[in-house]
Each structure stands twice: as structure tokens, then as C-alpha cells.
Length: 148
Image 1: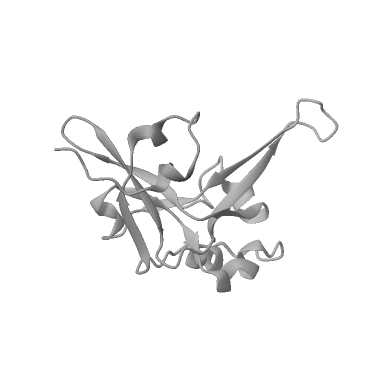
Image 2: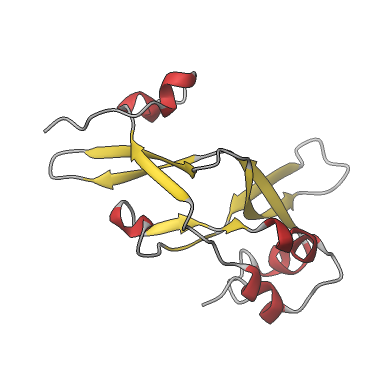
């Protein structure tokens, strides 16, 4: 089932698409006795954008109005599947304008934009310190040796 068919995403997919900037992300590989986090990023170190959708919940003038967004994911390709079964869609910059165009309602064209070139992605294990949102700092993306 595609995003155009899933009730929670149908309208946002047609009308509320966004880009979510990042310079890397984490995925966790299931090992025998634990999950090992990996940092995934482009070798060139540039900022990139995940394909996303946003939604508004409630009435415009309601004080409880909530805005939310989601990163679109897909089955992991051969490279990323070494770590995890799913991966986010990293959109190519040449597709940004077409993805964000509010006049683009063709769900087939939109679906064709949801591809990721992972050839320049690299990944390596990082400390489990990343497991807590309380932690922040450069050390969260430093490569470690995996304990055996």
C-alpha cells in the first residue's frame, strides 16, 4: 500500500509535503544480546534532506492546535540492510522543487521521487550514549570499536 492509499497520510501526501534537513542519522543493528547504534551520513559531510510530510491537528484558532511531521521511510536497500530493514528517504536536491510544488498532485510522479542514492553513504558503530535524548555533543558521532 502506498502513501497515497494509507488513510493517515493520504491528504498530507497530496498537499503537505516537506523536507527535513539533516547531516546524518542513526539506525540500530540487532545483535545477539543488544542493539548497536550506527551513525549514517554522506562521505562528503554535506547537509541533506529527508522526504517528509506534515500535518495539522485541530482548528486553526484553537490554542491546542498541533503541528507534526514524519520522515518517509522505505525498505532498506542492500547497503543499509546490513544494519536495519528500513531506511529514510533521502531526497536528491534536484527533486526538491518538484516534491515541494503544491500544484503537483500526481501521486505516480510523487512516488517516483521517493528514491535514495546510498552509494556515497557511509556508516559506522557509535556509542550507546546516543540512546538517551539527554545526551548531546560531537562524541555522539565518533566511531567506536564494537565490543565482542
